[in-house]
Length: 382
Ligand SMILES: C[S@@+](CC[C@H](N)C(=O)[O-])C[C@H]1O[C@@H](n2cnc3c(N)ncnc32)[C@H](O)[C@@H]1O
Ligand code: SF4
Image (cartoon, rainbow, N blue to C red):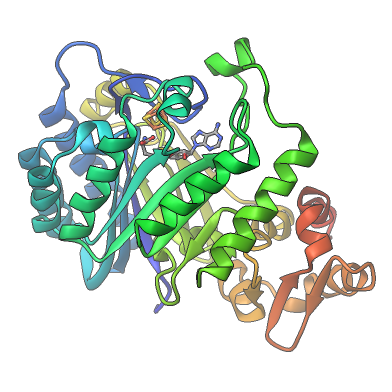
């Protein structure tokens, strides 16, 4: 099998919980159980890898939470453990997420020595006032310093920036865009701020949030500015210099396989022709306890054949260049004839285009993405 296989490792702690964030992240209270957690991750991985024993892992993504809270020693132990358990490709992309409030040049150097070759930094904004309003633990200067420190040790750096922030004007967004481009990284992710259920912002919605029209204009402005600067816009929020797309995330978006270890991590594997999804317990304490008992998965389900068209398209249609028809066949095990009637109908409606090789959402399709995706809910699968 030559397909990509990703490994996602979740680190569930942060210095503080940001008021907009609904990721599985918890503010650190007391001493971090770093060693116990690394041991649990490795036990979890040993168990998970059995299902795909020997298969080459093509990317590792250590996300969170704030994995850059890990000590150099802890991270080194994690990576050498990973290498001893899985068949890690010599050219694997190894990404680590970092918060500018938690890193220094030395820490970054140690992560790179342990194998990290891509660093993804949570910038959110370069405005100190906006950073404060977002409850971030770092300043603009710390963000700029973190970018330089990351660029000094790896070639591939991503910046996460959010837009449509409370009270944000087009001019302010422009300043963030200018600074993001000036940083000269190989990848940028621009996310529209969404108010997620269960967050502090959901309980008390901030004043002066841009309305839908302004937010859409901002998204267009981000697109035009970054594309004019030579970035390829390849997924709703993701922009890359040519050749620098994130391999790990692209595996998700093309319905590839990935192992997911750590609290709350999701995995998706093709096993004996079936697609199996796994979820770990989200609460770090419960996760640690379960692993001690040898219970790794909180949930495991086989994806029903009827659900494959929707599940596949949910991610694939996020990609601006869509997906190869081959990928549909390779990852679902179903023929193209299963979805061809709906593809033809959607093409007639101007929502997507299909060619010999590709299935690509049109601009209209991207604008009404959830409607487009939902059309695959009712495909009948023989
Ligand atoms: C796990 S965090 C990245 C690393 C680190 N935790 C940090 O925040 O610095 C993933 C990214 O998702 C984005 N994000 C989180 N919550 C969001 C929301 N409600 N709306 C839009 N983007 C969000 C942020 O840009 C954030 O950097
Ligand atoms: S945005 Fe990042 S730093 Fe903030 S709570 Fe979420 S995961 Fe933690």
